Amino acid sequence: MYYRLLVLATTLYLPISQAHQPVMDMAPRWDDGFGFQLWYENYGSSELLNGSQTVSNPKNLERYVQTTWLQGVYTFDRSVRVTFKLPYRDQQRVKEISNTATQQSNSGVGDLVIGVPIKKYLNQGNSTGNLSLTPSIRLPSGSSSGNYPLSDGSWDLGLSLSYSKSTPKFYQLYDVFYWYNTEGDRGMQEGNELGIDINLGYHPYHDNLTNSGVFVMWDITMRDQESPNTATLTHASGGERVHTGPVLVLYKDNIMFRAEYKYPLYEKSNNVSLSRGQEFNIGIGVTF
Amino acid sequence: MKQYLAIIISFTALFLLSFPISAKKETSVKPNQAVITVSGAVCSYCTFGIQKKLTKLPFIDTDKLNKGSLMDIENQRLTVAIKPSVAIDMQLIYKAIRDGGYEPQGASVTRSNINDTINYDEQGQ
Image (cartoon, rainbow over all chains, first blue to last red; front, top):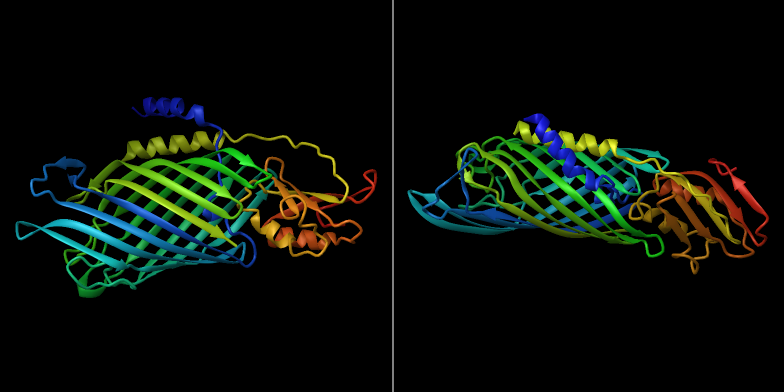
């Protein structure tokens, strides 16, 4: 079985074996550089899962979440940065409460995430890469009140290890992270989460004169989250998932636009819960 | 889950093996220009900081090229326009590149006479 998959992967891969880059993790790498990005995420579905199997959903349960992130970065020098990510979340769901389908919604500012990427750059002729270690903290800036809170009210700790490398035509990024979620308000505790992100890209067009270009990538997102405890009322749900899909990036000078679509290739819920569904994300960033 | 991990690992391994080795192109240096080889300069979005810092140097001619400089990411060559009859300081250009996150590997500078090109090593000497 593995051999057949490997042959299939090889066959699919060959036509795109010329690939590349620029991405926010690569900029700003200059001293005293800074940047901002607006990033919109949209996911949700009415598909009910029991483990990895889709089961009937007679009460039409559903969940949809739209999040707009304001993100910022400041680079002290290329080896040390500080970043922030502040979400504004708009969430709706139909949940079964006392055997009745109940509609719930909420919107507002979510939890602020602050990170300190520490990077080691490796410039080698026609390639550049960096190894990055990023400790992060998630502050409970979102409201934990109501029957569908925006936050569990906890202080959470994250650690990420990533590696990226690019040449004029290819880009690759690998990131492994872990979030340790502590107990917050009202006894809520979202499960700890392990994640792996992979981006493989091709840079088909670049114009030196106008400093502009296009590149395309393939994104693979893997998550494994422990089940939240029964007191948790947020959108968190435990389980494993693999989302994957194409990414399009356009850039000119110091402005970058990115759009991505992710398809749920594999999902396995720890309990009966809703699928995350398809994702559509779009963003624009600028560096100075 | 293991099957998907196997596919992903296979893709990644094939991707890593497919990186090409490119050959450098030789380019001539025009009058009042400096051409600097910048190791790892393969992304114009990432090298924006070099160009930003170069524009602050008094001897850079920001009316030429793209605000005084042009990055060729295929060949990792940075071309800088220099104001005629103004002395340049190669150490300041190298500092701008280093502060921009990269390492200069050597440079060639031509002033008014195209047959009078000066070469610098990676220390700017």
